[in-house]
Length: 419
Image (cartoon, rainbow, N blue to C red; front, side):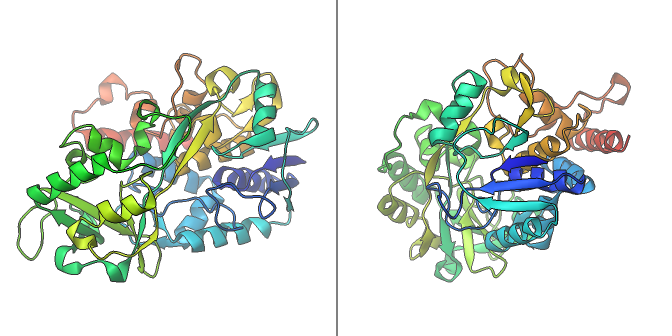
């Protein structure tokens, strides 16, 4: 028997993998008794952003990681496939339908019992997987620090606003693939040079909501608030969140100086996410500044962007590559609290913790586990999966073409996975 604490992506995956191996699982979830500021419903795995599952091609490290998870029977990838929405070459989901699918599937497993209660300390007996996520706080966070014998590290994270589709001015937007790849699943909102420069200045000077205990220097680069990017230089946004490369208005054949991309957030296509526009501006400032984008002048903001504190442990000093605590292997950790950054990465950590298995370093799953358990990573920083984590190809297989190199790394990984 094993206790899994937390019913997010990592916790659900870990519980499922244990149950599939014939292990009786108690899955403990604090909702609906208590919710963090980021939680809105009682469903499992509810905090997935629609655009957070990333690229689905094998030339992309996230695509490789997802394929490995599919082949290993990931319950999260199964539910994502059942609730996916068009997103070109990426995997995106209808968030509410996805959460409902995960909740129903996990609850229905005959070896998983769900208990609604708040855990304030690590169980003293029996095997346990702690998958309480980067928002872990209160008594449990204090007990984790006592148990591990060290301070947790931290950073902060932000989400992007959601827009009502019917309020987007299509006279100033057009549908197209993301950077010319895949189907026309994105709405592109172009800006002229003059429009962009004024917008950038207003964004850089806009009022932020209070975020206690953090400064810009602590922003995690992988999820940087758009206003921070705006302050870093007049062209920073044009080379990141508003990159216009490969985007031409089909009606005019012309490119734009800068482009905001919107991606559908639900299967019905009634809600769109502002891609790359994570923010912690005050709500009135979000409405004022983002409405300066021509296509959003009359936009209805269904949900404003928010910021929250994320925490993670010093995994290279504390965990092995099975996500087990070195000093007490009966306790495992999974999810972003281990320093894996990203939802798919959290799923991978939950799968490894649930299987309590070591994977080859040549696989994306194994490379990620090796990174978070390598004491040489000092200072330790969260990471998404990328091909740089995998061992290079042998000298005789080296190629100059980047796409071909990535394909070969993926082919090797999938071959290693089946050994």
